[in-house]
Structure formats: C-alpha cells, structure tokens
Image 1: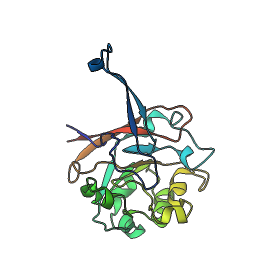
Image 2 (image 1 turned 90 degrees about the vertical axis):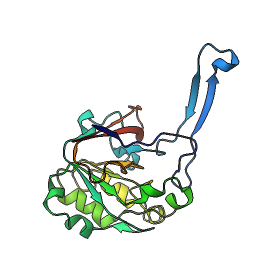
Image 3 (image 1 turned 120 degrees about the horizontal axis):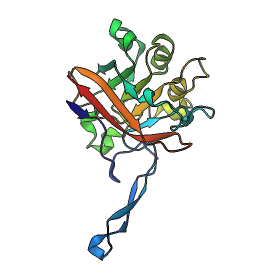
Image 4 (image 1 turned 180 degrees about the vertical axis):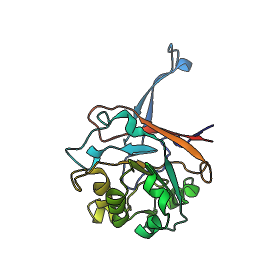
Amino acid sequence: MLIEMSYPISPDSPIFPGLPADEFFPHTRMKNGDPSNTTMVRHFIHNGTHVDSPFHFYDKGQTIDQVAIDSFMFSNPLVIDLNLLKGELITINNLRNIGDPIHNSDILLFSTGYYKYRQNKSKYTDDFPSLSKEAAEYIRCELGYVKAVAIDTLSIESSVKGPLNNFIVHKTLLDGNMFNARPLLIFEDVNLAEIINKSINRIFAFPIRFVGLDGSPVSIVAEVL
C-alpha cells in the first residue's frame, strides 16, 4: 500500500514568513475557444513539500540535478513522533532516548504534531517547532547511516531563531565541508498524518531535476506493510 506524503501545491498554501506565494497563470483555456488548457506557474522552490539540496546553503554544494538518484530512496525510515508546542526545539535527548533504531535509519521523519494546524495559517506559520543546532550536529556526527531528515513544519529551522543564527541548522545538515562528511538532504512541509503508527517498508521522495538550483518540489510516497 502506498501513502502520499506531499501536499498539493496551491497559491493558498501556507508559506515560510516573508517568502513569495505561488501564482498560477492560465495561458490557454478551452472555454475561451483555445484548443487546450495550458498554464504558467510561478513557484518558489521552498514553498510546499520540497527538498533542499546542499547548494541551498553551501555555495559549493550539489545542486538538485547533481544529487544521486539513490539519495531519494530510503529503505530504513524512522518516524520520530513528538508532540511539540510553539517554538519548541527537537533536542539531542529526544534523539538519544530512541535507542538503537535511530542508529540504523537512513531518514528521520520528525512528526512534531504541527501537521494538525496546516489549515490554520496563522498558527502553522508562526514560530513552529524545529530542530536544535545540537540535534543537527548529533545527526551529522553520530548517525552515519542517515541520508536525510524530514519534518511536518514549514522548515527544519526556527522561523524566529534561524535568521538570527545565520541558519546554522540548515548549514550543519547541508554543508558537507563543515564536518568533513556527507551532506544530508532536508525535506520540509511533509504530510506525516497518515504514516503515524504505520509499519513503513520504504520511502521514495523524487524531485524535479531543475538544473543548477537549490531544491525542488518533491513527491514523497511511503510504502507501508
């Protein structure tokens, strides 16, 4: 059984504070006498369910078309089900308390519980839960099998603290040069509602291969048993 984990893209979708909203422009419409329906889209890469490539915060990092395709398939996913409040951070202790399973996982999916508020834009976009710098360093340095992290909020990084701290969480995860290790991918605004307490076999999260860009919309699908 397959479960879709990407949200539909819409001009009305909630977005990270300060980013431009998406726009759809009808190009031709059959109701106007045109032979087909076609559309132009103005899409900001980091709106909606998307993946950040290393180039997003590392000028020498791989762009989304350069990341190996097997980097988007995960055979040992781990859902970390937390119930966090506004502005709360995922800590090292949250990760250490999981025990052995986290050391064998190739993607960590952080369910903060905030997916429940996505229809409430003012709440969903205001100081949502995110990952602490220390937890990001722990993932980077101690969890050698992890290829990616995903979260059910607009960003892995605090909308309040991130800009003040020069987006250190993103840089810790994406910049392989920082720790002389592999870069990690970041999936944001992921719909985790339907996979909580499910037995997940694999996750596929394939991007559009925009040449030279910092990320992409992504279709994430979980294969559950």
